[in-house]
Amino acid sequence: MEKQLKQIQNWKTLYENETLDSSLFNFEFRLSSFYNSFFQKPTPSLFGICFESFNPFGFNHLNYYTILYSVKSFYDLFLSNASNLNIALYFDEQIPEFIIKKVISFLNLKKCNVFILDSAEVSVNVVKSLNFYPQDMNFLVFEKENNTDKFYLNIFKNTTSLSINGQQKVIDYMLNDQEFITFGTDEVPTYLNLEKLLILNKGKQLQLGINKYFDYSEFKGLILVEDNRDYLYLDNLIKNTQINFKVVHNNYLFGYFSNSKRNFFQSFFIENFVTVEVIFLVSKDNQLKVLIKQKNNFILLKNYEVAFLFIDKEVYKWKNNPQNEVLVPLQNPLVLKQMIQSYNFIEAKIDSYKSGSNTIFGYYNDFYICKYNNILRFSNILMMFLLIQTFVQYRQNNNLLNYKFLKMKSRFGQYLYQSSTIKINPVHKDLIRKDFLLKDEQINKHFAIDKLKIINFEIQNKDYLLEIKSHYSKTKKTLTAKWIVSFDQKSSQLSLWGEFHSNKKLTLLTKRKFYLLHRKMLKKFKTLKI
Image (cartoon, rainbow, N blue to C red; front, top):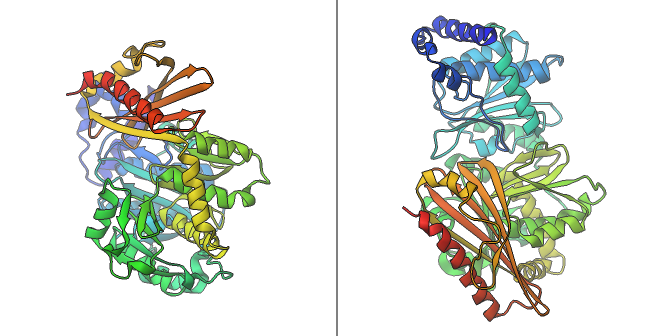
């Protein structure tokens, strides 16, 4: 209790020094319930330290105190013994200017070289692709998650994202820090806008690493971006390379491709589509979608299909280290799992992932973590350039791209995948984890629940609840089914993802059996429907 009281006094003094409202500390802390909620921790995650909202009070909210003390915690833990430090800061536009100035003042006290990335001209996507090699640069990125109240603090120590274990150290240090923060002078930092970044790129190429052994002009594509800042950066970046891609900022086209439930698009939809072989969709949320041209159509690849093509290409660079990890979602298909294990890599499930030291690649919901010139980050831009190199090398090696695509489709074609959503009452979410379904419960005449595993994992407003497995054997034929059940907290949508397999050929009759089985399982959850 003494420690908490000291922190409350520091918080109050900090706010009073800036004439911010601190009256809450005089009254509300008499209530134990408010006291407990005030000291709730922010949470570490794959996408950075997660704060619930921008709110002046509480450790699990982003505010004047938590911004300053999270920066202080990172410095004290990881940088205090270093010299000639370079720190680049990126702040969401909702963060007040006086807070930014105080962060700069604190870092000035520590003799750091401070750089401010202008959020009006530089997007988070661009920041996550930057590398100032050979000069060490630490990044602190405060970003707001689109369409929610949540904020994330992304920390990059030199070239690598801070691991979940590292994030937890920062959080624990902040919640135990009783030292009152002090400040230095108000020296003006170096501001980096788009023009300055492009100048840096011209001199150092920002380690983009364009492969000069292939003629990129033979491979043409389209990059559709949602954010105009990404368009300006990528358009200028690609102009000076061999990559013959057109960068387009068109909200209608982007929405058409990204929101459509279709997987096939006719190639004449856009002018000069005949010469385009691949389309990349770069969202402002750091997601990446890929469409590949096959005959006269463009096919939207699932994220696990992108992962398959990429791993199949990169495996020869990775296979010398058997400790390499590939980060996968809970809905990772068995085909990809077997592929990862066949190369003696470790399949790192997203719900138990802690460290990125051995991670070579990962994917989740159109987010990709990749290593590009020793940068390990979730970056749609870096992943896009890696895929361009992959596709170009396939294309120019006896047109292997078509062969690899058909091979990939054939492998996944041995399985059936189904995904359904229904809207349920949020109060039923905990019921699903308890005794809503039971082991050995019948699904239909032939299938019963073999395994029921409770999942307690939340990421990006999605709460994972259950893993369900079932099988049916007759003579020499075995049918297996697996479902992952999750709940979207924002939309109150329950999602049921199913993977189905037969040890014999997947015939139309077998597919129909699986379709009906999936509907039976979905029907059980429809009793919770609003």
